[in-house]
Image (cartoon, rainbow, N blue to C red; front, top):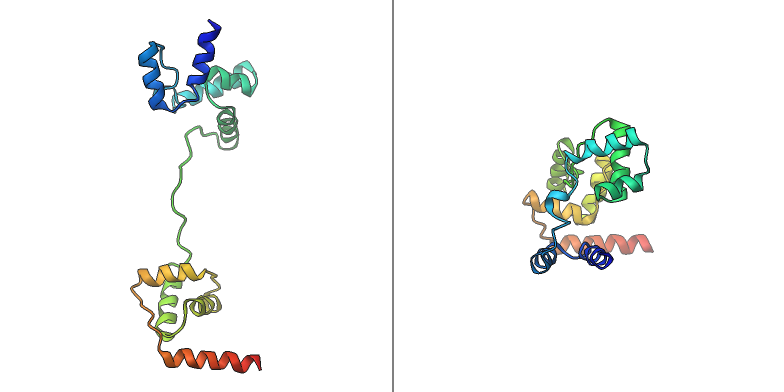
Length: 167
């Protein structure tokens, strides 16, 4: 009996594809299946057992075959919000430059068409207070279909200004 438990314990550490093959080959009932993952139906039971039986989080985790951290997070979420539904996963962060600031950026780009991306970042920060990286400025300008072909004369003027400042 104990050898079967050792085999089962090691099976739980395998990826699900191998679990299926092992279960078919040795005719061992599956332990880890998609149905055994914590679902919405599972969560009220965990809360109920914690409140009624007053047992430790580790014992609850072992009893329901879930991670201790899952039980901890679920209890914390329930105590703070009263909600046991899973939180939204992932998602994109909202763009830094949008709306009025985007209009201001397009004006900056049109008025300073020979500016480098770094200079555009500085101009945007001066006008709106929003600080973005050069890469972000490049992505935004690309999405707005702005191309930046620098005139050779402007580059020479900028080099002259920098050399005058250093002297």
